[in-house]
Length: 424
Image (cartoon, rainbow, N blue to C red; front, side):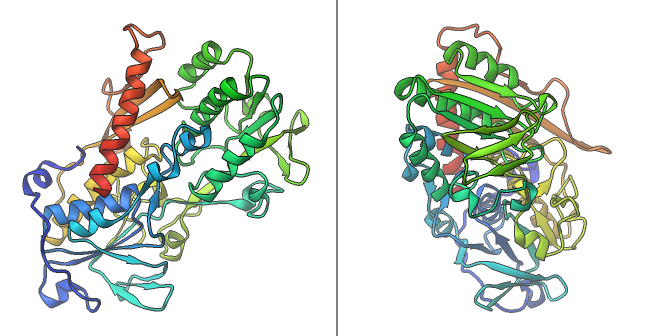
């Protein structure tokens, strides 16, 4: 999919024995040790494809959770037509591929010694380090919001307990109540995600609480797939959803969790349920490793995703500054394959081949109504930019019978295929 030609031709089965913690493998004359922090879309993809490319590589993934819960399809759990088990993935597939999976928290990185220190004090050595830490929520970025406030006004932007909390709140909300959604300014994880959430919750309301309303106070003036979403809102949920752009007073200035209220240029607005999605930044280990910039995200070489700040370190997925590529699961999966190819070339002393980068993002309006956007990217002097005439969005007016239903089917199939590609 996104691997280089050399990488695709060089992929092999994974069956080699793993090395032990100690000196970097290259110092011992072995194929090399790669440590990957994070077993999500980017990290797990990188680990799996490293082993496919060179089964002699010693690849270790460090992940703090027993299983990985995906952000994609978490909105469906909130709306009640998916269960948490359906978006939760274990790591046995990685282990079968020859990847050593270590449960733990990466606490620090020593670039000079080329080691990662875990929360229990143990250390892993590496010849190449891949950071795929995802995002951290910037609770200081919105006055009044905090981790404590999130227990009353859930963000549900890291899937798990928050996903279920928001679901319970919507179930308990009286018919005729107002659900307020507060999307952040760019950049943030999954640009279409807040608007898919609005859509599928509207579907839930239509079927269960038809007198309810949804009010979207947005920090932005526009959003991903805006025309498609708004056309769907008009046809599927007329009169239920009001979206207020940032330029029109939609930017939330502060929140009061105790009062279940947000303050905008319009004044104070109370909701029965309030979903606050705060500003975001790269996960904490990226900052501890010194690869994050002042803006909170990680600059990388666009051709390889190698950090421009720390040699030997690569950053993949949401934490990276990837030019025109969005922070999405599909993008992270693509980037993971490019990073794996670049590392294999680097360890072999070869120059990396030009990367192939793309992203596809499906969104559900209802369980049977899907829309999508896809892009192919090129690397040039401007960084990662869209390839002209190589992408596009769903047509505004369907031209075929059941076209939206077909796109919903594609959405489910995309999820099945990409999760199998990553976690097995």
